[in-house]
Length: 204
Image (cartoon, rainbow, N blue to C red):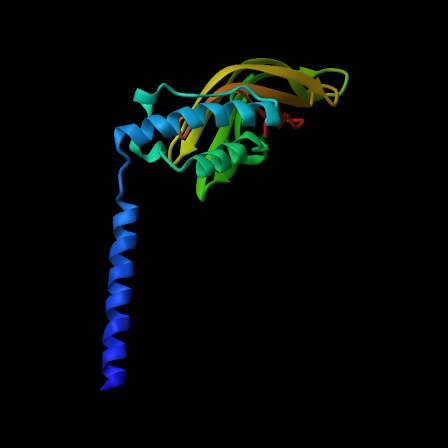
């Protein structure tokens, strides 16, 4: 009899615990709590910005989505992880080649708080036959574009810098952009990629 009672008690405790967890998962913050959190977010962004030497701010409170709200410490952990993302695109995607224009896409996938984000950079280039080497070489850049895909977040490219290397067989490109994620704005996030041109003018 005692064993049955103990078993019933344990079942009740488990059910109550599961109900409490479910309630916590669907809990929404009231406006007062959001305002309190928002003020803390602003201070956290300033602190992480100084630590990471990166321009970090937060969106206006009315632009926050429900999924952006999190406990202040979780917000700090999240934006700190994003601040130190190492964005170097190395994974090759599709490449195309026409008579004098070649393009290729490279990407990198990073994670924060268990979510994955992929930044892709596409370069379109001019290539010419280099008579000194008897092979195709880069002769200019038509365009450099980039985009972010993932759970949430947006990326707006603001510019890029290029460096021709290896006798015009390699272009090193540093892309700058504004990354908005989880209510935080990283105003000058940098990403790096290298594109290579082979003797036939194919870019990878």
